[in-house]
Image 1 (cartoon, rainbow, N blue to C red):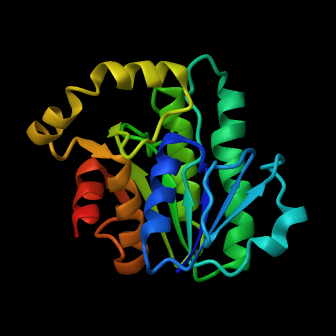
Image 2 (cartoon, one colour; image 1 turned 180 degrees about the vertical axis):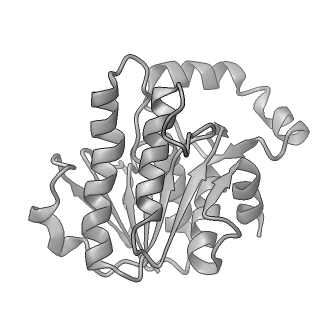
Length: 222
């Protein structure tokens, strides 16, 4: 399996990258983003690229992949709807439109979020934009497309969020998360769960195209 990974420097992306590199069935991993992931590995290549709305200059590097794990995203706090749309919807669709043309047999996995609004008409701005992005991806002629909607995610194996507020939150709640995972196993995921579930979706498919936390957990556990 050859994997293309967007957002490898983020918390989820770091966890997904780790599982891809550990998986003997993954032959090649290529990351795309504005910064390097800070990891070296024999099967890893990193494309540092700024203009994430235009992939024409690097198209030749984006062919030959079985899967795309799209983990790139930002918090909507303090952002206008136009700015959040430009990052969440426009970047995703710019990449997807190129990839579906170059890799028609690709499985595309998009990290969305719990509470995403598939109607695109709800009150929450971020949920509407995520829903618009999901719906657009699901209409595209990929071999398969899956929307992952995690809620609470526990960082594992040294993974850290790049957002300072999230790092503080995770440091405060870290002692409680293992217990909460035992009490609520289908509500709290780990970064490891996310990576394992994405790889499983490519290999075996998933029971639904939109996966909530419970579905992701079950997929990760096999």
